[in-house]
Image (tube, rainbow, N blue to C red; front, side, top):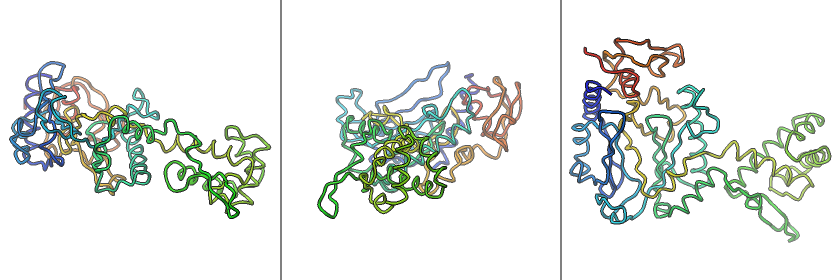
Length: 396
């Protein structure tokens, strides 16, 4: 990054912070803070092991610090400490930590970073976010007042959970939560419980009170509805597409979903010889469809630094944008995370890496391209290209 580019971005990031409403997290003075300035060369320099008092003089002075320094990236710790400014982790005095979930499009099994476009990656990551929020709400009972949802400013999303029940969990306990969310090690026995029938005889039932058992039961009922709408030959053919289901088992399952619907609704698995086989097959489907590949190290790290909501991401120029729960479905990062400060004017840049650009075009596809050389562009497009290292600032 050339000096002119570095100075331009530092100045414009500072201008953004002069008008931005960046709100510190709860207990901001108990957290470690870090930032990365714009520096010459290819590498970056992290300035960390600082308290908010060290860098800004306190929460009220944070906007002044950001406006003055115009940092490339800004972070704070998920953890709260007795002495957040100590350079020794052991001496910081860990108190507790928010439960953080990180979704990155690069880590999604449905995304090939080599072939997927940036908008496609963002769309896939938002689908994973919706699944994650469903798990956190329905299975863990976290409400919107206990979660903060944030677009990372680049390829994914962060969810901060600040419920008191999770703040003191150790790494092992957080790893168990990750395993649950990812559907790792999910045993069939964990989905099933023994309950007495009307005669006091114990029978195997799916757990219906929550968790993966409830999710499998919902899929089971939905699948049964689909089978009942089909002709018998079509239903039997559909059943035999499942792993472990042959002709005889398919006949048994079909009889069950036809004749024992009420027992199926109760989760009773002893109503036919194929019921357990069907549950096993649908469990795999449910886990594949509804589990979420969150980044384990982020959640299990009790001292993780995470991006400050409202700050700018120095590799894109996008806002690390907080999102209300009821606004997730409509959120468009390529529009909603563009800083207002960077709209309304044009800048001169020298494009060194030509090609498609995901911002500023109507279709946001490969038809919106920049050629090599000096040209005038909308500022938010220019900031994106400069931050990505695909252009240098040209003289106005």
